[in-house]
Structure formats: structure tokens, C-alpha cells
Length: 237
Image (cartoon, rainbow, N blue to C red; front, side, top):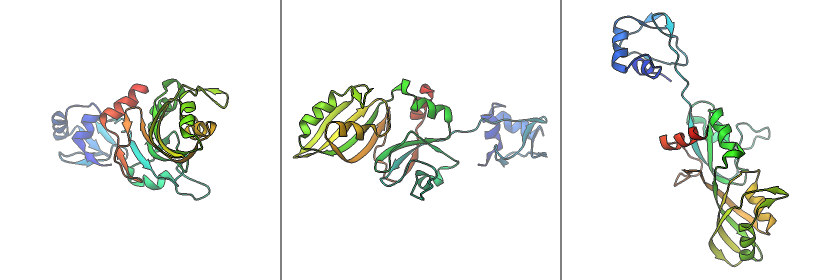
């Protein structure tokens, strides 16, 4: 992506924007071997930018976005069965981004994507136990008893888990809306937890991951993370 040359030089730590303009006027900056001029634009990833003949290196700008994944999309960038993927929804996000963690095809909601491998690995690492919050629509024969069992759950299919946070939002006969908070993010964890206590998941929406919230973002749309949200990710890394 092209930017004003003085902005590129400032981002690279060469000098302030004003001082960079003076370097350009003094003929000390070249772009692809040609002396630069004030007001000129360049692409730091494609053009050869030099100061006094020495290459100017600009750290690659990482991207962090939040996608509201709709139901029916797989969390992968390419699918050998030609199913719709999250890549289809983020082609205009700039650069190649990769999903952090997964949401199964039938689930929806908050999905983070980035090209920062360090941050992605930190967010997924079990030691960090970043809380993940879901709105879950379930049905069962005795929903109240099942919810009480879900609240007390400390293992899942023989593996230990931290006790989930469970809130009964609405109960209508054999159907209910729950808010479930988990701390591990095992494969299809919420669905498996519900099945273990006799509940069938009708709809599952991830609405938060740590301090990052889905909010009112429409299904199929994405937004860039805020500075505060990115700072949280960097703290994990």
C-alpha cells in the first residue's frame, strides 16, 4: 500500500515527518534508485527506499480484524469440498489473514483473524485461559436440572475443565437461552458440554473473547480491532 514518503520514513524511525521532508529536499532519500521529492508516495513493501544509499526497513504492519461469522461458513481459508469459507467474507480486509481458533460450521459469531502468528499462538495457548462467552439456545426434557449440572461441570469426557459460568437468560418450557462462559476453548466444547447434561444446542453464537465483543456487527461483516483490543492481544504475547 502506498503512503507519503515522509510518513514511511517516520514509521521506520529514520526521523520525524518534518525532518524527513528535509532529508528528501537534501537529496539523501532515493526510491528505486531515483532521488525522491517532497510529497512523493511509495510502497514500503514493494519499493527500494534508501537513506544515503542504505536500505530503509519498515516493520510490516500487522492486521487484526473481528469477523461476525455466519452459520454455514467453515473456519478455514480454503476448503477442498468447496464450502463457503471465512476467506470469502474477508477478501477486502487487505493481505492474507488467518483465523485464530475455530467456530464450527453450524456456529456463528465472533471470530478473530490476523497475520500476526505470535499473537494468534498466544491467544490460543491453554495457559492464558482467555474467557469466551456464548449465547446458546438449547432444548431438553428438564432444562433447569441440566443447567444446574452444567454449572457444576469440572470435567468433559474425562478431561478436566474449569467450571463454566452459566446464566439462564430465558426459559420457555423445554427450550431456553443461556449465556455460557468457558475458559479453555476445546474443540466444540460448548456443544459437547451441553450434550453431556442432556441439552441439544439449537443455535450457538460467540459474543465475546476476553475484552473483545461482537457488539452490533452484522453477520458476514468485519471490522478492524481498536487500539485497546490490539493492546490486549499484545499483552498476551
